[in-house]
Length: 128
Image (cartoon, rainbow, N blue to C red):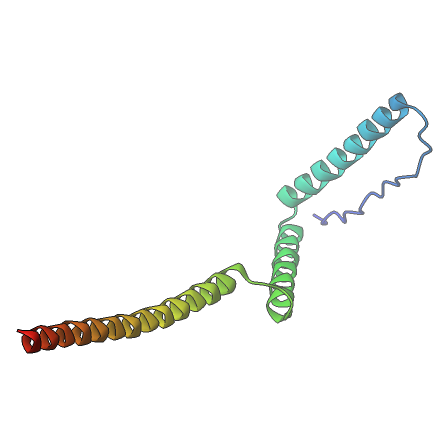
């Protein structure tokens, strides 16, 4: 038994002049019909031809890998996860700096209170 050689059918889509709403609707319907026919042909071929199916899987995987690699290599592309981590780290650094500054201010206030308290105690003890 000889394997069938599948020749892809080429469906030409021509550019058409559209002047009315009815023509636009007809053109949309025509394009949807063509696209649906193409989809059904591909789907049928995927079911019937294991080699074609595997080839399509490999080409899609390669395309995904190329896209991912291009995104990773692009210095202008912002990775959402990396950006969120960077912002969280930035917030932690700011919060730690603020806590340090607040602790220093607290210490200074405590020192001022001690000085006032002891100076007032000293003043009161000297006046009595």
